[in-house]
Picture (cartoon, helix red, strand yellow):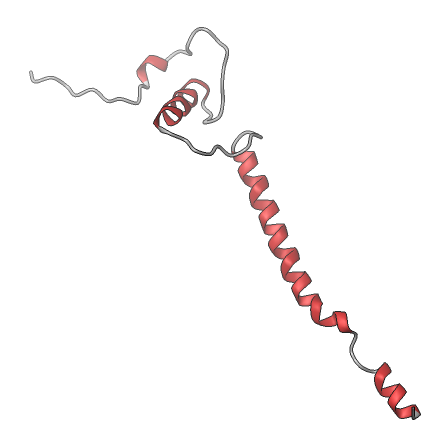
Amino acid sequence: MPVTAVADNLNRGVPFESLLPYAICLGFFGFTGAALSKLRNMQNGGKRQRRGIDRWDKQMMDRDRRLTGFLRGQTDNVNAPAGFELNAPWRIEKGIS
């Protein structure tokens, strides 16, 4: 093999150079996914996201929000806080007077 052919082979690009952009894109997508997962986790009070929520679950979540001020909050206090009876989700029509 002539010396110029050996030198030409040494000056070529490394095969993994073409994979670097893919690794960068994969890293950014992974970072974005992890950041969004952490943000949702923080918004839910450190709990996992709920799945398959029906009307009953939504009603109980609304009640918990009115009791504790937080959508995923729960309390073991027997007595409701002051003003709980006034913040009912159902609005009552005023009668005809």
